[in-house]
Amino acid sequence: MLDNRPPRKELLSLARPQLKIAALVATPLILACVAVSVLQTYFFLSTIKATDILQSTLAREMIPLAIQVALVILLLMAPVCICAAVWVSHRIVGPLRRMANDLLKVGEGRLWGGFVLRDGDDLVFIGDSMTQMKADLRERVGAIKGQQARLEAALRRIEAALPASAPGDAVAAAQELKDAVGEMGKRLDAFQLEPPPRPAGVEATPPPVKL
Image (cartoon, rainbow, N blue to C red):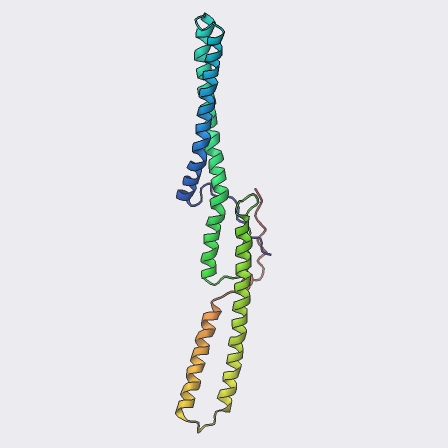
């Protein structure tokens, strides 16, 4: 099967949906970090109060330090949460973007090849479904092309069997049938069941590097 996995070039695919997914993933993570920082500070202050050293010089020095540590942890974790959210959203939206592009190619008649996702992408079942869909379409279009070839052969026999003195209606019907078969052939020719041949001297493109 043709390996058509693209190299990783874009961080954001389908920017608006991906940003929505990233926001949905990042928001609870950031809120969880805020909750952990607040609870950490609260338990620290509660411990100091319980040991009756809240008014001591050590306590007055440690309380601002504890708050600063909590803020630093929050500031460090927020970018990590955002990066994780973007990464998760990219794994989801990336296959959807590739599927949209591949469907456009199918609409143009390119039925050859499969639909292979990159390693680590989610929604892997989409790749299998798309590959099976293109295989089914190739089979059906190939069968229709075979029927069209049979019609052309039958039409040639009909034309050869028509006498020179055939009625005008019969000649017109044969011509109409010939035009219909020709139009069918043009429409079917738009479907590509095999990849186009490479020009002589052009080497095959190596598969993309897996990242």
